[in-house]
Amino acid sequence: MPSDRTSQRSNMTDMACLIEPMIPALRRYARGLLRDRAAADDLVQDCLERAITHWSRRRQDSDPRAWVFTILHNLAMTRVRRQASRPQPVDLAAVEDWVPVPPAQEDGLRYRALVQTLSQLPEDQRAVLLLVGIEDLSYAAAAEVLGIPIGTVMSRLSRARERLSRTIDRNDSSQPGQSPNHSPHHSPGQPLLRRVK
Amino acid sequence: MISRPISEDDLNAYVDERLDPRRQAEVAAYLDAHPEVAQRIAGFARDRAMLRSVLLPIGDEPVPPELNLMRLVEARRRSAIRFRQWAMAASVALLVGLGGATGWTLRGMSDAGQQEGIASLAREATDSFAVFGSDRMRPVELHAADAAQLTAWASARLGRPVGVPDLSAAGYRFMGGRLVATEHGPAVMFVYDDDHGTRLVLLTRSMTVDRDMPMREQARDGINGFAWAAKGMGYCLVGRADPLVLHPIANAVRRQMSGNA
Image (cartoon, rainbow over the protein chains, first blue to last red):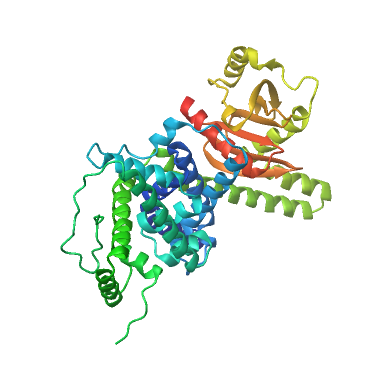
């Protein structure tokens, strides 16, 4: 059945065109969740194998990006649960290794505190923060990936941001002397990027 | 006009720039009037921007070869073609069978069709596990202490350097191993156990069919396994552990084995 095979081939090409550009983001999300470079890439490989195998079986109306992220997220959560049931010694070197070294600038300490706090957030909060804040998924897509209502996405997002901010502020209070910085132009669509102290 | 009250959701959507322009303006006006809230939201935005500056660059890293999509698709396509060939052979066998053979022949033929490549490796690994996994007398011929002798022996018989993967991070200790016979030549079996008597078997042999295959899950008689092949060597990790437990261990083996090659 040549026509069948041709359509299968073009289906594969569609799939490759849609999935391939996502790979860097998938690696980033996996690494953010697992905080382990090699484990994250293993997870992405599994995810891609599954996506290839099940591509033709996905719901046609679903957003392909949300679909692939869902596969990855579920694999990650399986792994996280397994690790929780079998605690392992924390490899400090690996923890430090999962993100590029914070730039050596005056904000270096703050970066470090931020990454550390992110690492310590509960998985469900970190997942929302990464999907929405880093991968730019819509709230609806994030809800689909996580299998929760949008309202829950919003409350987790809020809690995650609150916690991040509070922890870092505590950290910050040890380095006073930052001049108050009133941003003169915060137009709509351009949120304030500096903390007003 | 009285606008809807500003909610926490609005504030977060403001930080993410997901509001429509009118609502965005309303939130901005609200923040102007409420400095404490504005300060908190400015903190959210700042943290968001900093996180992006740290994490977004991960996406610029070159993608490693294991994650090359075309390679994965190709491996999958080859296995699909083989399946189609097998299905055709099986349907011929079915016709022959209907032509007068007994039901036994039929079953034998269709079974035989599945016994190729990685499926057969998985079957061999399951068989080895069934025999040696529960053996309390002498599950291994050479113990972990003789690992060097074992790997030298295995490497000589498999014609390829074979290393012992370290699964201690997953809580499994290397017990030892032996050579086992398969229809497809010698295979080396490594046995692991945790401290509670739960064993895992890793079977490795060279492959003529399915020389490169993505990882596959399989299960028979309560024995679960993951099999894959890389560069002409086939690997299958089996045990009674839950597939959710086995899978990451198989990933670790695959990673270590690809590091050796």
